[in-house]
Structure formats: C-alpha cells, structure tokens
Length: 156
Image (cartoon, rainbow, N blue to C red):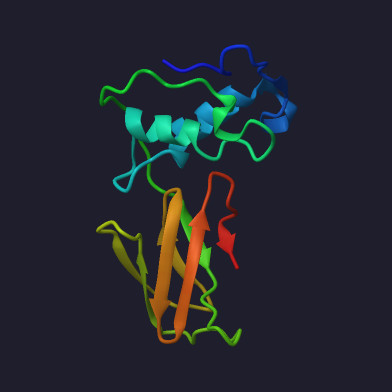
C-alpha cells in the first residue's frame, strides 16, 4: 500500500500524462515504476524496488523524498518483469575524443556484481540498463553514468 502524499500534504493532479492526460503525480510515477523504471538488475519490479523508486528522487522541489507517505507494505511481491531499455552511450575520453569503433567497454554497477560489455560501433555502445548509477570504462574511457526514469535513450 502507498499513498499519494504524506499526512497533511496536498497531492497534485493535472495534465501530466501522455498527450496531456489528467492524472496525479503519484499515479504517473507509479505507472513508470511498474513499466520498468523500478526494475531491479534482473528486470523484476518487486515490492522493495518499487517502494524505493517511489521514495527516492520523486521531486526536485520542496518536500523532496518526504512528499509521499511511507510505503508500509514491505513483503516481497513480484509485480512485473520488464526488459530494461537499451541506451546508446557515446564513449568519450577525458580529452573529449571518442573511443574508436571496435573498442570493448565494460559497464559496472558499484558495489554490485553487475558487469556488462559492449563493443563500440559507429561511435556508440549499447547497454540494456535499469535505473541506477554505472561506471563505464575501457581504452581510456572512464565515466560515471546515471540512468533515471526519464533519461533519453541516447546518452551523450
């Protein structure tokens, strides 16, 4: 169970959905989470990953994480299995040059066990990723990448 706002706080409903559909901010966030933005490394949207997604980074304005009430349901439930979207990442070196085609890059998710590799092709490396902070490295490329619920598919 979760609530759109904390006790004594207002919730917002307006034209924020696809094509200006009227819905609440909480509903919009919940739907994004269920559609994969809250998926864990295995692509599973579970109660814990969904609760964390709803609690963290919801708003940048006043209220921040406290905008939503607590999510008291903490039992492990599986809501959905979603494939992570594929992000095209432009692998730049510290001097701004691109890693050449054929370069093998490694993407890790510190401190977790995630480790993925991809080969640069036409200036891009493709990785299926969920929301999180990642480290991209290989052949002079060292950069951190943050994937959020609204990160565009092409990551410069």
